[in-house]
Image (cartoon, rainbow, N blue to C red; front, side, top):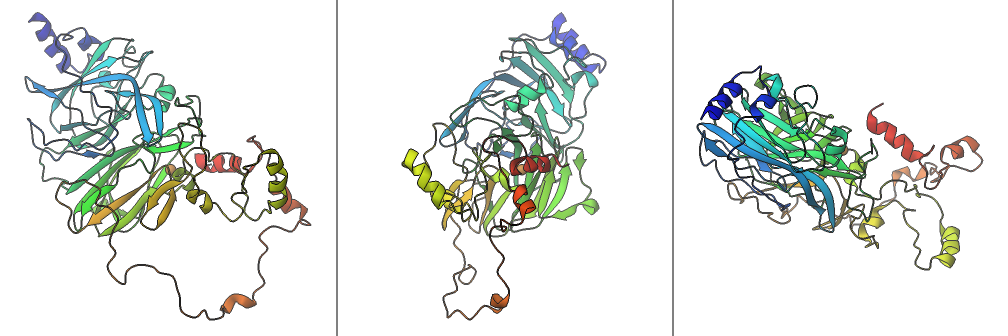
Length: 476
Ligand SMILES: [Cu+2]
């Protein structure tokens, strides 16, 4: 009993941090739920405490808690996990409770919560509660507000949730490695009054990125910008679940960015309104309309829209982020006559195929031989053929007959008559622009300087188009 009393005193005093608390109630840890499935698991309504509408974590789940003396107790276990990025590829990541990202933590404004963190990683860690107002000693910054959580140790964090909103958690010890390995999760604080900021559908995911060599399963942790797998909740299209809604429903999507570059999230169909950031809800009069919501590094955005029937693409607008692995170092072949090259290579490699001389759509249609455990650059099939996408891409599927709270994929949209683009099959009139001189597909060889710009060094990164792409990446 003395221990327990000591614990409550420590937890209530903001000057005492996680270190002081950890010496107390180590006894009787709450059960640490485990989930290794990569399918979306809509949580049940809260079994106790204040009511709220649970978040639907895309390809994820929410962490159960136990209510103890009015405190919601959660138990996170930091540990190595095996994550399916998309069918055909598994990654050896680090995460929490069996998954990367870890389970979403959901609680209500005003709740006192206690989060036990057990470290089953091969190195130390901490957990930082990104965006949440709390005593400085609970902020989880290794060295600054606490010593790191040792291997095999369990620590406690405890605080009262002062404001509702969209937040995250991630390590603040060896961050570069641990985030490159997939350690992160959403932290949603629901309003005390469930009618506040109410929507019909509430989705959330974290933008993350990995650098995993084709054929390998382990991320390269020293990569700074040159990632090759662009993922939502550690899933790449076609592994990302659709956002399902019923026509007319108010839908909210919450996005956090824990990659090393910004992601303009582009929503086809309905216009969206930015209603929240990790700094709080945007007052009604200050909400701004968008069709592309840029989410910068370390930022979160919540946006809402009224669902319109259809299949609406939603994706990062950086087009190389809707590509999977093997996208790097592929030279541009458009307009390059490869016939002579193909003849020479075929003598050495009998199956050699010329690719990309008319653009790269062909590659989406072709089943190319791949090393084990990687993903094609572009994949996924829609009702009209290959989607030609990978990475940060999904579909908002809105139908008139979806049941409330049902996230089952309704299949392809049945377009009402007269609302579908179609091939023009009537007689073709002469094109009025035929008189203009045609632009050459390839710069004439005589223009020495233009040619110089197009020189590519095979394999290397020095001085070619790929390098220019990276500069664009970092936003210089
Ligand atoms: Cu992006």
